[in-house]
Length: 132
Image (cartoon, rainbow, N blue to C red; front, side, top):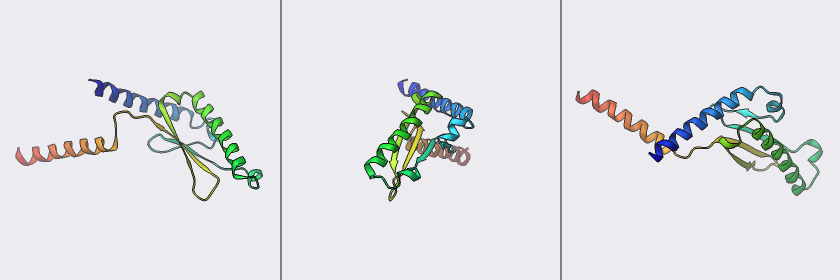
Protein backbone atom coordinates (compact mmCIF):
# COMPACT_ATOMS: atom_id res chain seq x y z
CA UNK A 1 0.00 0.00 0.00
CA UNK A 2 2.88 2.34 0.81
CA UNK A 3 4.36 1.84 -2.66
CA UNK A 4 1.05 2.75 -4.29
CA UNK A 5 0.83 5.90 -2.17
CA UNK A 6 4.39 6.90 -3.14
CA UNK A 7 3.64 6.16 -6.79
CA UNK A 8 0.58 8.41 -6.52
CA UNK A 9 2.76 11.19 -5.05
CA UNK A 10 5.27 10.74 -7.90
CA UNK A 11 2.59 11.02 -10.57
CA UNK A 12 0.75 13.97 -9.01
CA UNK A 13 4.03 15.78 -8.30
CA UNK A 14 5.12 15.35 -11.92
CA UNK A 15 1.76 16.61 -13.19
CA UNK A 16 2.03 19.66 -10.91
CA UNK A 17 5.51 20.39 -12.27
CA UNK A 18 4.21 20.13 -15.84
CA UNK A 19 1.29 22.44 -15.06
CA UNK A 20 3.45 25.08 -13.34
CA UNK A 21 6.12 25.05 -16.05
CA UNK A 22 3.53 25.24 -18.82
CA UNK A 23 1.87 28.19 -17.08
CA UNK A 24 5.09 30.15 -16.53
CA UNK A 25 7.26 29.24 -19.53
CA UNK A 26 6.38 32.48 -21.34
CA UNK A 27 6.73 34.75 -18.29
CA UNK A 28 9.18 37.62 -18.49
CA UNK A 29 11.19 36.32 -15.53
CA UNK A 30 11.31 32.80 -16.96
CA UNK A 31 12.81 34.19 -20.16
CA UNK A 32 15.01 36.70 -18.29
CA UNK A 33 16.64 33.87 -16.31
CA UNK A 34 17.16 32.05 -19.64
CA UNK A 35 15.22 29.04 -18.36
CA UNK A 36 14.18 26.35 -20.79
CA UNK A 37 11.94 23.28 -20.57
CA UNK A 38 12.65 19.92 -22.13
CA UNK A 39 10.17 17.24 -23.19
CA UNK A 40 9.94 15.65 -19.72
CA UNK A 41 9.42 18.99 -17.98
CA UNK A 42 12.91 19.43 -16.64
CA UNK A 43 13.77 23.11 -16.35
CA UNK A 44 17.35 24.04 -17.10
CA UNK A 45 19.66 26.95 -17.79
CA UNK A 46 23.35 27.63 -18.23
CA UNK A 47 24.94 30.13 -15.86
CA UNK A 48 27.65 31.93 -17.82
CA UNK A 49 30.07 34.54 -16.50
CA UNK A 50 29.38 37.97 -17.94
CA UNK A 51 31.86 39.73 -20.18
CA UNK A 52 32.99 41.95 -17.32
CA UNK A 53 33.83 38.84 -15.26
CA UNK A 54 36.22 37.32 -17.82
CA UNK A 55 39.36 38.80 -16.23
CA UNK A 56 38.45 37.90 -12.64
CA UNK A 57 39.91 35.02 -10.68
CA UNK A 58 38.07 31.67 -10.71
CA UNK A 59 36.97 32.15 -7.11
CA UNK A 60 35.33 35.50 -7.89
CA UNK A 61 33.65 34.03 -10.97
CA UNK A 62 32.34 31.15 -8.86
CA UNK A 63 30.91 33.54 -6.25
CA UNK A 64 29.16 35.59 -8.95
CA UNK A 65 27.80 32.38 -10.51
CA UNK A 66 26.44 31.33 -7.10
CA UNK A 67 24.68 34.70 -6.82
CA UNK A 68 23.03 34.11 -10.22
CA UNK A 69 22.06 30.59 -9.17
CA UNK A 70 20.49 31.96 -5.99
CA UNK A 71 18.36 34.37 -8.04
CA UNK A 72 17.13 31.48 -10.20
CA UNK A 73 16.38 29.42 -7.05
CA UNK A 74 14.30 32.27 -5.65
CA UNK A 75 12.33 32.56 -8.87
CA UNK A 76 11.71 28.80 -9.02
CA UNK A 77 10.45 28.89 -5.42
CA UNK A 78 8.24 31.91 -6.15
CA UNK A 79 6.41 30.18 -9.00
CA UNK A 80 5.75 27.16 -6.77
CA UNK A 81 8.17 24.56 -8.14
CA UNK A 82 10.30 24.31 -5.00
CA UNK A 83 8.56 21.40 -3.26
CA UNK A 84 8.29 19.30 -6.43
CA UNK A 85 11.77 19.55 -7.95
CA UNK A 86 15.31 18.66 -7.12
CA UNK A 87 18.25 20.67 -8.39
CA UNK A 88 21.50 19.63 -9.99
CA UNK A 89 24.37 22.07 -10.52
CA UNK A 90 27.14 20.73 -12.74
CA UNK A 91 30.23 22.66 -13.86
CA UNK A 92 30.69 22.59 -17.61
CA UNK A 93 34.16 21.22 -18.44
CA UNK A 94 36.80 23.67 -19.69
CA UNK A 95 34.66 26.73 -18.96
CA UNK A 96 33.53 28.84 -16.04
CA UNK A 97 29.89 28.02 -16.73
CA UNK A 98 27.44 25.86 -14.79
CA UNK A 99 24.50 23.77 -15.94
CA UNK A 100 21.56 24.22 -13.58
CA UNK A 101 18.81 21.58 -13.92
CA UNK A 102 15.56 21.32 -11.96
CA UNK A 103 13.94 17.92 -12.38
CA UNK A 104 10.81 16.39 -10.84
CA UNK A 105 11.34 14.34 -7.69
CA UNK A 106 10.51 10.66 -8.07
CA UNK A 107 10.48 8.32 -5.06
CA UNK A 108 9.22 5.12 -6.63
CA UNK A 109 9.38 5.50 -10.40
CA UNK A 110 12.78 4.53 -11.80
CA UNK A 111 13.98 3.78 -15.31
CA UNK A 112 14.52 0.13 -14.41
CA UNK A 113 10.97 -0.27 -13.11
CA UNK A 114 9.47 1.40 -16.20
CA UNK A 115 11.49 -0.86 -18.55
CA UNK A 116 10.64 -4.01 -16.58
CA UNK A 117 6.93 -3.12 -16.47
CA UNK A 118 6.94 -2.48 -20.23
CA UNK A 119 8.67 -5.81 -20.89
CA UNK A 120 6.25 -7.63 -18.61
CA UNK A 121 3.20 -6.17 -20.35
CA UNK A 122 4.68 -6.81 -23.81
CA UNK A 123 5.54 -10.40 -22.87
CA UNK A 124 2.03 -10.94 -21.53
CA UNK A 125 0.46 -9.66 -24.73
CA UNK A 126 2.71 -11.85 -26.87
CA UNK A 127 2.03 -14.91 -24.70
CA UNK A 128 -1.71 -14.28 -24.86
CA UNK A 129 -1.70 -13.98 -28.66
CA UNK A 130 0.48 -17.09 -29.12
CA UNK A 131 -1.34 -19.41 -26.72
CA UNK A 132 -4.92 -18.21 -27.11
